[in-house]
Image (tube, rainbow, N blue to C red; front, side, top):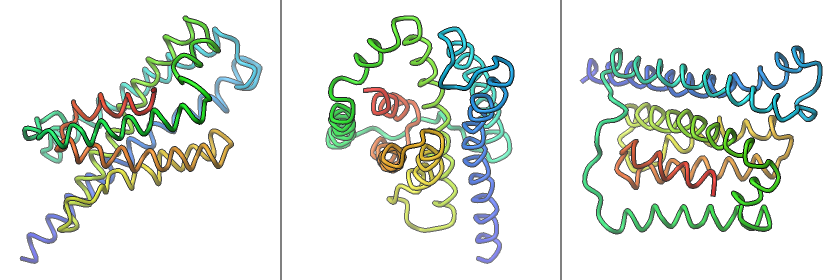
Length: 223
């Protein structure tokens, strides 16, 4: 029993480090946006031109893609966990509950943006920046999904409670809380923290199926 407990604890730490690696990967953007790029372009983030913003999104996405690929590979080879393993067949109520979270996120963003978020961003950015920004959102979703997936695995190894959205809690405390600093708004940070928790709940509702969860989490982020 003690041997089993030790093995579970060691496995839990492996998954937690992978989850924190995903969070650290997200943090790369802050280094680019607040230090490296202003140094190169000679202007602060708020004064970036359209070309500056597009370059920023491209290098960020490339960096996030590399980080995500490495973390998924390490998880499979070192921890024996395939992120893309299929979940169990979903019952109707799980689909409905997960869709309910998407609707709630849409309603909250509608209130926050005083209208349809996608349309507002399109009107503000124009079609070129809009396309690159939403590609950026796709890569961001991939990394915070890894925080949730690996975080969930870590705490499930340490506890007997598998119906608690541990990954969502970890996402809320890392990716969510990090927005308080990067966005400069406590309200935005608190909403993103709540969103991180909800993302974890949706992941569980979808029976830990990363492919299905990714689609739902992306919709919750952008709608």
